[in-house]
Length: 452
Ligand code: ATP
Ligand code: MG
Image (cartoon, rainbow, N blue to C red; front, top):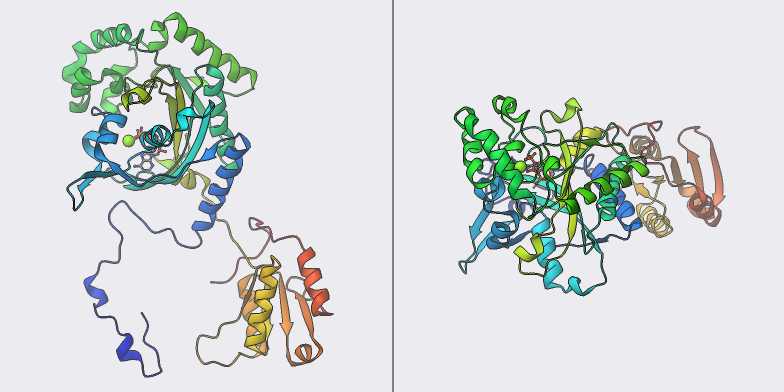
């Protein structure tokens, strides 16, 4: 808080001195400041546009849920539940957890909100912060943001292809290039047990050489071993048996169906036979969108998803086919590495502040973005030349000048800030002229950046 030069400073003084408070946010979290939020807003708009064009509707859910939901819905054997959850007891001793991911909450709301009675498929998307206690590095935070999409009620590979294509369309519309789509099938409850046995038999002799996490996964969740990030372990996972060689006829037909649908769309993909999701309720299709961009460091996965036909039963619903994905917005932003600049169309330069504000309100109501001069000190308007300097710094395309003469004649002078040409029009004509202008292209690199 700044003290005012008007004698009220004693009253306004903060009661806690700033030195005592850490101004850095908690580890793994960060502030998104103006200059950064514009790109985030653009991505959110893009998500809304792409997903609603496919009939996917937004769902907004609590940021914390009962801990049990994630224990069951994400799975007790996962890193998320074992190591990464922000769980706490509230004042009534309920165990609550900041959501580490979106799907469990979406399924809970689908069941609780009666969406299972809607005509299938029920197609939903969400966006928001997630929380995981993780080691921090580039593209890995403790509060991070996901955009996700889920479709319930259709069992065939067509909808797997649709959700994958929407992920690709969203990422491409956001401006990502060089995407690498990887797909795999991990079978179902019928064929996976035989595969799991083969995998275990192959890996058992190597156990003493593998990391401690993988030795644990061997018993509880052997498929997850293939998702190990430890470099030294990788050699042991190169020649493992792969799930697509063990698919039952139904899974095989789903797998071939997915590949031919994607091919027919002209979508490039790679089969990555070691791509896994380690939980029993996942079935058949799993996929990731990865990039080799050095901007992401080692965190090359932007988007991960799959079919989870068993999850609704795990959470108390009827068996329901379901497929979805989630992508990390921070990783997307790192990859895009660009800034969106939003500049006003108009800056008002006026000899009368009250009239300037009145005009600003009128222009804004007409959909014209406009700003005006606010002197840092004193209560008189600054000289018009000073205000024009301000107009220049704001990056506005037009200065609307309202000097004493214009005010007396109910006219305005419109100055094109690029060509420096100006014209005087009646207030009515000015409004018509400005309304007819194209809204400023906020991404236009040609426009000068405002001076900070
Ligand atoms: P990883 O293997 O990288 O830990 P994950 O399997 O835990 O990923 P998912 O739960 O599938 O990740 O989440 C989907 C996406 O969300 C990831 O591909 C990534 O883009 C993003 N994501 C996950 N965890 C984080 C995090 N801690 N910080 C930033 N983004 C994250
Ligand atoms: Mg993780």
